[in-house]
Length: 357
Ligand code: ADP
Ligand code: MG
Image (tube, rainbow, N blue to C red; front, side):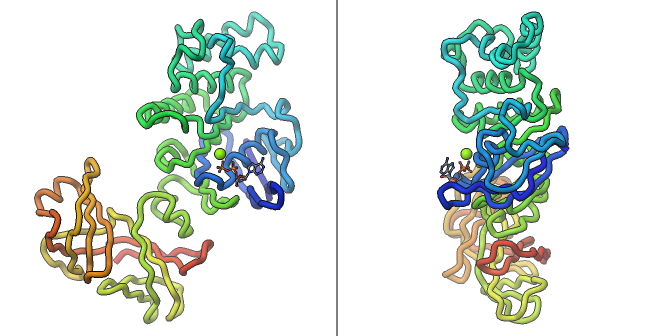
């Protein structure tokens, strides 16, 4: 076990930023901590790094209790979103900095820096200054610097947050490669669901200081455990309705089957745009709809569907299907919802009932 936190809590002036968090991260894992701004991600990371002392709970790093150990004694590498490199130092000196501070013998520093430059694919740039390289390259230098002293754990706090989309995408691939090579246990903070789902073995979804769900990217995406996770990860339609008879929720002409809720229970049903099946001819169980608007989404076309004049849902269909089926604005179509998740309305920790129609 590389990171183990129990009942971890941090309160700032009466405000609970991190609220009784528990998790374990195995050695060599790459975990993403995903949540909106203000959900407590940085505070959690800073406690693990020793930059913030918890009000309650414990932290064990590689089996050792480190709850209030100094950052130096934790053997953790840290990269922030705006990790200012030392402007007056070359890339070489920036990477060597931690080694010099730790008084590593001179003859060890040069080969280690050279190895790190290779690892972060910046060989040849060692004599440049931070202002002479790109933003993406600077973040790679920051990662090299964090890895220089061979930490057991790497903590990355939105390391690509300030970069543009194209560079971020390249760096995601790069961090995956880097992790494969180094196998260092990594906790990667992001508010970007695509980033989290693409790079991590496991994702922790954080909301209001708590971890609402932990799972593989597929588990988080396909089986959201709470309404918050359903809304935060991926796109979703949601509708509010009521259990009208055992196991049955009706929303207009749609019928959803749900388990475990009493009659009269108010329910929120979530379904993804690509789980809305649209056809140009009626099929068993399909409901009439009209396309009020279409939007281009690259390989997909987004259809805004109006049902019974007052209900609106969004469907995503492959571009080829949209063209061949004549899914244009104003067209009459037929709709089925193939998969959905039901939650009791206005509750946040609830068992999920997933049923396919
Ligand atoms: P995130 O990284 O998910 O955006 P943070 O951990 O930075 O969230 O912050 C969580 C909450 O704690 C926010 O409401 C923030 O304002 C508050 N907070 C963070 N650090 C401090 C601090 N040093 N003093 C007071 N409040 C803080
Ligand atoms: Mg933050």
